[in-house]
Image 1 (cartoon, rainbow, N blue to C red):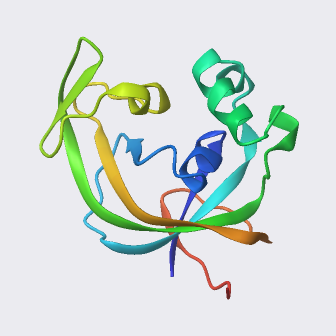
Image 2 (spheres, helix red, strand yellow):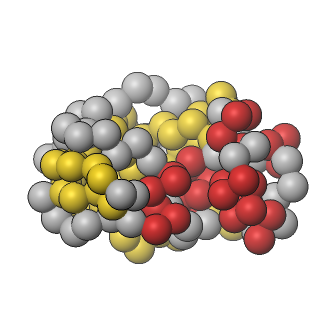
Length: 143
């Protein structure tokens, strides 16, 4: 199964269903099920952002120390990959939907980047240890 390693807190925001688009500098043609792997690094500055901190608190996550790392935490489906055409007035115009609201706080919508649309996100009841990799990678873990 394909997997992607995502730095915290972004991986947890996806697993919680709060982040529907993963932004990357590169596009993917892959569509289908993907494991969401929380990397070993945590963006502590992002965890202190008032928007992110507020959303995490709603889910009873009080500190970056509470975020799981080095584990697969969710399953999702990559439904599409949209190129960001323009970002103006807190709205990202893409080749697919316009993206706005809180979602904008959870990604880098610079023109020319890509927004991977994630659907059917399911957080695992227990995280599964795994070593992450760059890009899309094959995960042989069993659920």
